[in-house]
Length: 375
Ligand SMILES: Cc1ncc(COP(=O)(O)O)c(C=O)c1O
Image 1: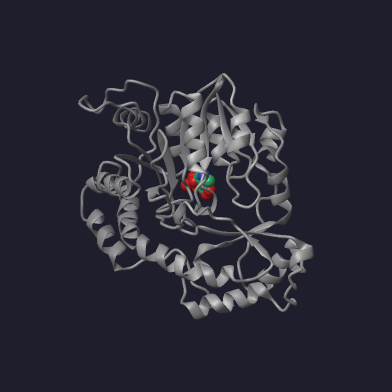
Image 2: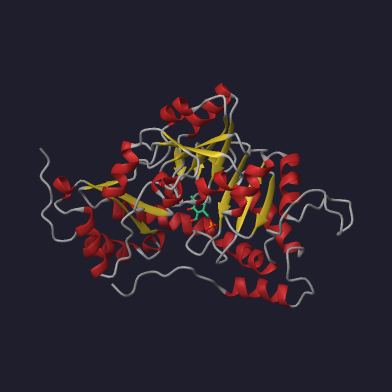
């Protein structure tokens, strides 16, 4: 298929806002559009403060630094995620503790997270994999019981809702990514959201070269860094945010057409997730049930022009840096290790055509295998 919906997409609205930046004397991190984007995106995700930055990897680091997490501390992370979830913990000198995911939600198993808590645990980092939220009722209860901070790596979860409450608003703070493949993007970009004003100020100090509000530009109170987002990024993101709702609704409408392909164990989305941005279209393949192995399935789709990723090649803790001795702890993760062998994902842009386009894609995904007879 050569006529698949493409991503990213832009309209004259991006150009209009970019022109405003170009016409101004401030292209950098101090243009008012950045503050405007921080306020609008924070409110969109039901939070009161946002601190935008250059990408969703440094925003994880900013969040951990502001939370006071460092050497000697442990942070519980799921064994399945993009590397930044764990590497940000390692970069601040803390120890990631890897726990398994649930069999079909691809999200952290709260029961195992509970077993992983020790006197060293400072935070649980929930990841909303593919856009569908981790079990927030269970993880909030665990954080409350143990006094451990709840943080969210919401890099996949723009606009996602658990019982009407948006991703990123559950714990002390949350991190989002606006990298090129995300459901809203400026090519690169990230933001931390929080409802704690003092926490937001600490983060802003660290990512703005150790400055404090009310002091001169050349007063630096801590060893910070420059992670400021440029005004060009904020301009594009403001325009992208305006279209996000209608794009999510389109994907939610089209999803059942693809999910109708029998034999694939599509991601289980809990009933509590009343709004899913469908960032990744995730599934697992039982070769006996589906009649094709995961790798044969991926090869067939790729040959037909459907982009498919045969999952991560390993769990997070099987990355060379952790295998090579970088401090970490691992609980048994049989589900994560099985997903590496039988799971896949399709990109969300496949759900951004009309229903007929989605039906054509579903036909290719189904292939000409004989339907499996129910027992
Ligand atoms: C779960 C997760 N966390 C963090 C990141 C890092 O975001 P960025 O690529 O903006 O640095 C990603 C990026 O894909 C991600 O998938």
